[in-house]
Length: 280
Image 1 (tube, rainbow, N blue to C red):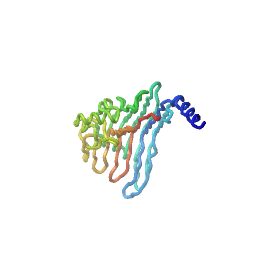
Image 2: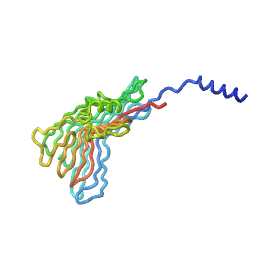
Image 3: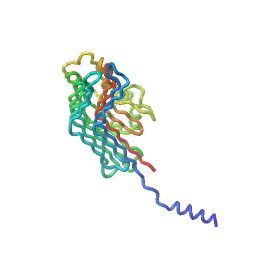
Image 4: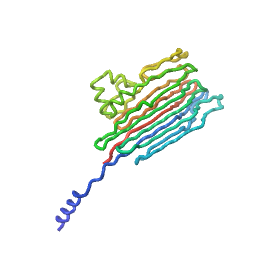
């Protein structure tokens, strides 16, 4: 009798329909934010500049949008009066698409100013798209032509930033990127912020910048460090078009400023993260 019950149970289990594939959505977008830890002569600070516009997609997909349509300013009065951060407006969007599993994450910031306007940028736009067909195991994630850094100025001198998203559009998965890098070492060197960081199971620091120029000359103390850094003596380092890549996600930060003396901290603008995966 027990053997018969066991056989019946196994038969029912085999006949039960399998659970349909489930796609877990993930998409996040941040407008601009920052944190200041030192303003000479005071150190050990934790001055948090709240995130201006943030969107996050639930696992079921849908739409998450945030709009900051009024100016925002973060000032301090001690140890000296200083406008650390301001912006005119910001908007973020995380949205799943119809049909097959697609996700778009978008961040845009306008009129961003840092350190009393010593660093300004008129428009920062970041955008990633994730696509996953029903028969695919992993999503294809890539930046789009909407990405931009426009109107960047250092001490009122313009900086022109040229972007190149083609390598990541042609290799939209981690496996594809690794395969392309093995075939073409020059390709690998061209996309990495630091050599030797692209490896299976790791997180590679890449970039989407092809060139940076100073039409009117660079301000004193400013040095362009290819591929995507601008060092400014006494101010800090500006990172442009950073793209973190792993087999699980891609995270794009269009503008990140690591402030040095006399103000120390970090400010970022135009940040998006996208991926998605199937769970059985």
